[in-house]
Amino acid sequence: MTSYLKLAFRNVKKSYKDYSLYFLTLTFSVVLLYLLRSFEMQSSILELDPSQGTAIASLIMVLNTMSVIISVVFALLIIYANQFLIRRRKQELGLYTLMGMPFRKIRIILFFETLIAALASLVVGFTIGIGLSQVMAMFSASILSVNAAYTFIVSVPALLSTTLIFSAIYTVVIGFNTLILGRFTLLDMLTAHRQNESIKAPRTRTTVLLLILGVSCIAYAYTVSLQPYGILNQMVLVIVVGAIGTLLLFKALSGFLLQSVQRFENHYYSGLNAFNFRQLSSKISTTYRSMSIICLMLLTAITALVTAFNLNNVLAQFKDSMIVYDIAATHTQPFDLNGIDTSQIKESYQFYVLNGNASDAVIYPVIFIAQHDANQSLRRDHQQPIQLLDNQFAFYKHPNLPIETPDFSEYGLTDSVTTTVSDLRLTNSALMNSLKIVVSDATFKQLESHLKPTYYTNINTHDSQSIAPMQDNLSTHVPAGTQLVSARDVELEMAGTELLFTYLGFYIGAVFLICSCVLLALQQLSEASDNIHRYSILSKIGVEESLKLQSITTQLSLYFALPLIIAMMHAVVGIKAANLTLSLGGLAPSSPLIAIIVTLGFIVAYGLYGFTTLKSVQRIVLQ
Image 1 (cartoon, rainbow, N blue to C red):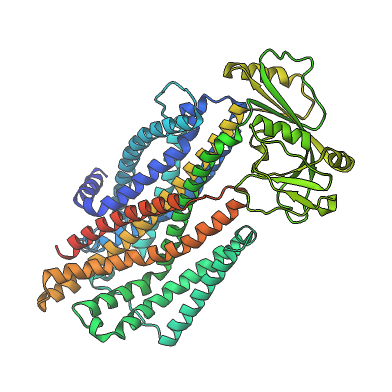
Image 2: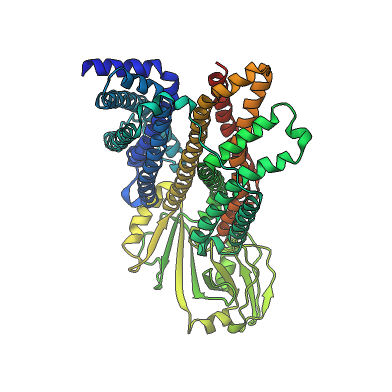
């Protein structure tokens, strides 16, 4: 057994270039899963009071769920990368068999090789993950405004759960190795470098039909997505139809691309273009399924990153307007401050509103406010008070809500008065999405008989140290069912939401970007081994080295660019659909700048990975 272990170690050391991409994939998986699993143990999170951390608790639950999904994704990716390794080493394994080594012993060697790679990736991954988790802790503390003393934390539960997950993945990999070896014959292994997949060029009619069907499916998905509530009501349909359309489009491209270029004979027969486009067409025809998946993963990555950073930017802009009072109480029964120690109170505001509805604005809550209460809020913000007749109303909303003045004729309100202030600040963030309708005091009295009332009691204290004692004092006097929220509570909820979108968008974007790049790289590296003899023939017939380098660059650039271009087209529509949905809650970004910056960064990262793959392919083919 020791000799097998030594041989396995020597094989890994000898084939480190083949194992490098596999090892990096394993290591990145370990790092990401550890970061997800260790979030709950960050010092900044541990400093929070349980009553303050509802948004954080939701974030922890989401990240734990996401870690399970990511585990499955990485398991499939690792299995795919393992198949590339086995294919690269077919001849070597065939030589072992030719020398009389039984498959059972070859499986033992592969088991030890997998074990060595697994242990190395776990050690390196945990080392990097533990270091990055400290950075994440400081980032979380800055968003949460927690003055937690820095503590170096190693999450033992995260170490154990990550090790358990990867043990299961490696067990599956070993099982796949056993199945694959069982299907090989000695002839297969020794002639692996000569085997090519048979390619049937699709007929022109078939190509055109597939192209029309694919474009039609994609156009339908685009149309539904860009309708109001379309992505919310028919998300599954959009995803399924869009995925089918993308698959058909790549299937059609395998024939359509070559047939289109062949029509331009001068260009087609120039240099190595005929060789390049036939090679590219052959690649797409055999990998159109995986290219479709890669395209959809790139779409998910771009959309997740852009939407997350857009939301963070919008929430950061809203933070000041959402936190108006030190303490805000929402209750359904009348309540005054009599009997409460008011020495800590700097100022207080009480508003009495009625909950109604509007015929053409049913998705937003509508509240009616008496003129004298509205003027109290306006004076607080140093704005001009308003005067209304009985049939008049003033309409207030958050500036980002996409709605015009609604119809309130059923309440006898027919005349809308133009106001210079966009919104009334009656309490903290709870009313951001409400439509606030100010009516005359007499009209308000008439509405009281058939609309449900709500009361808002808002307090500002003399200093921040008085907020917590004042909140405790109020909690013993307010009516049952009262929601009592401090500015700090709102700030933590906002920070938790920011963290949720930041981490969720980053993890989804990073995972799918890396998965896409790894899949493309593995396909190209595997293809490079097969192309060695093809480029050797080109050398024998006098093709210059520069032309061969240009050929490799052209093929790989187009192969990397195709899924990215289609993903970018999808992403433009996807981001517009996401912004359309977010606008319903007043959360749509006002500028495309964030989207442009994130997309450019994404393209640069993708391009760097493509460039690295290009250099590796050139080294293999032209060695």
